[in-house]
Amino acid sequence: MKFIDFNLHQNVFEGVEAMGFEEPSPVQKLVIPLAIQGKDLIACAQTGTGKTAAYLLPLMHHLSINRSSKIKGLILAPTRELVLQIDQQFQGFAYYTGLESIAIYGGNDSSVWEQQRVAIERGCNVLIASPGRLLSHLNLGYVDLKELEFLILDEADKMLDMGFVDDLVKIISYIPEKRQTLLFSATMPPKIRTLANKVCKKPEEINIAVSKPAEGVLQAAYLVYDNQKNKLIAHLLAEKELDSVIIFSSTKQKVKSLVGDLVKAGFAAKAIHSDLEQSVRESVMRDFRNRKFPILVATDIVSRGIDIDNIGLIVNYDVPHDAEDYVHRVGRTARASSTGVALTFINPTDIQRFARIEKLIGDTIYKAPNPESIGAGPAYEPGKTKGGNRNYSKSKGNKNKNFRKPSGHNKQSN
Ligand code: ADP
Ligand code: MG
Image (cartoon, rainbow, N blue to C red; front, side, top):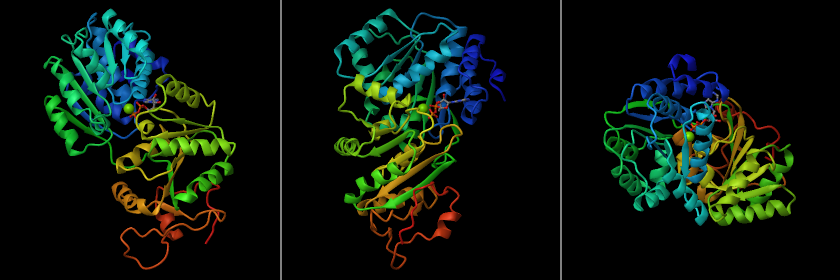
């Protein structure tokens, strides 16, 4: 099946060609025909599978057939980075359609608020918004969603995790019941199903997500004490020709201190976290995307949905709190069909949590021995069942289909 087979409006199809998309991804093959038919959908597929185009193209198709000057489409997404990224894809595909979108997202900058207000009053075809900020505009009365026909919830699981459920319900109260609703999520926990049943009408379900990192990601973990982490990071970074590396950490404080240490050690690293001004965050993301510097140290906030291709190495400086976040983070590496390496640092308190991740992905992740200069770390004994020592036999690692030895990271130390 090719894009031409969807019978998209000619102007939309030309946008697809201009974007260089040749073959639809599996989720696109399933979603696009149903969405063109006007069905409500719940679609679950892991990060990097092309969900954005799966909903943008049918939306643009409908809007190109029935032109209107009213706001007909609303796309809700959890973070401003994601909103901006969706907006960029929209602009790309919409080039030949004349359709217009406005990105609505939060921030401290009052001039941005004013720009958003003016843009809304001027009008557009589609709003792409984070829930909190859209609700603030809605409450002031100048956003007219009475003619809305298409509602899309992207990264619905993340929106719920971030506590947007009440905002979503309020926003939806402004929208006509007669509409098409598409809900996208990387995971499908029960609370998403509950939300979906509330906002969708007899939705078709599309499920191509198993909670597993994309194929092609080479995963390994190191067992370390906290005071070994920075040494290990410096060691790993120094060993490789670095292209693009993202290091995820759980807190802003850790991100700030790690980036400081890396810069002191001579690495070109920058941080992204929610304390930074929005304009700074955007320019950091842009520069990283454009390969102006190789190492990005980030909090969870950029772990989902942000589309940066060909990340060579992901480091989980801490084990992610949410097992699903592991999958999302690791999904940053092998976008489309490239390959990447994902390494996780496990300290003693995170062992149990990491065991849960292995359970979720249904696989044992190779525990790489620490480099000699770092010294031995704690033992990996989640249930404390098997007796004694660190338990990462090489045969076990080789049996694991996800494991290939990340080059240069495994100086044998024991
Ligand atoms: P998701 O939302 O599922 O995480 P995205 O929609 O962000 O994934 O797509 C991931 C990347 O793959 C993006 O860079 C996107 O431009 C690209 N992509 C998506 N679909 C295709 C396709 N059919 N052909 C080529 N590239 C694609
Ligand atoms: Mg997405």
